Image (spheres, rainbow, N blue to C red):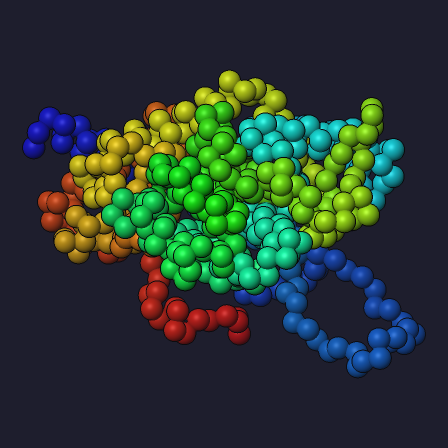
Length: 511
């Protein structure tokens, strides 16, 4: 064994020892399975002499568990300890950008003037909130190079819907009823084709091929597949940087071809964390994009919401975005509605969007400043390239020969699969060793993909720990020590499922 291999082996064993502690890790059964308490948490007297006014029969016993307050409290607190989050440890989900949520942002969102207002209050009583939203619109416009901003969408996919509805409205207003095709690369997020279809468009695939990017030749072939002038093409949906972790180098020429055909460029802004302060999407031809505030500007991610997915548009598309948007009138601020901007496609949701997320995002932007936001992007890209440089010899790195990646590194299980170990096995093993797995089996352009995104949040130490474990896996597999990978995880409250059986015979109800 070489000196380097010995160091890796030693660190690997240390990691095993550190994360092997099982003391005070709770198992938990269902509330219905607990021993019933004599005194439930709520004990109300039986109502007497009240007739039912619902028009239906009074229900009999409904089978709720009869448990005490301590039992209920312990039940949910114990389950909450199973939830892995960015506050627990490294969260390398490629394209999902799980980054630290600074507590300063949370403090700002909890100020009474922010937390205790109501969306139906008169505008004169919430001028501070409207000013904050206007400032956020201005920051987003400056960073994207796109002057039209709407904060209303409640999440990334919602913003994607708003962007494509804006494009649909623009074509409708211009009488372009023949424009019904949207071009989408095969590496796109799955929401892209789904959103296009929801908006009444047909999807035409653009293959990315061996480069992981859309080439001018492939784009031309898709653009002119039906007619010489591409008259039927309404637009394209492209993520840049794309889901292979690469910057689309031909994007300016591709955007020019699309615009000449009368189409609009929708950019999925999921990976904007790699560009802030470095490149403005408006400068490479984008007409409309959504921004995930949780991915790029550190608002909380997951847990069912609330989220936020503002859209930014070119001046041409700005009249068509949903209402309301915030406008400045002299020294005061107001909400712009349908009567103020009749070209809009209307309301996307009730009220003005997720205000608490606006507070957090603006706090993040202002605390970093322009230079800090630029460094965030630089550090995110640096971290991903560090991971790629350290693991490209241990795992198959399909695009490493093309040069550096952006904010995420793409590997596959090609080498390990020859020994009978798959991407799923590696993901389960990471769970055993105390790491949340990376994004697996996405993008779909290659088999067995592993998409790793450290973000700027992580220190070199935490990234090195992850790299050490991944190198240890590769070394074990190469040495033939593979059987354990089919058994992992062993230390979690739940072991590996029979996934085929679970998919074919799901148990959806407790009896």
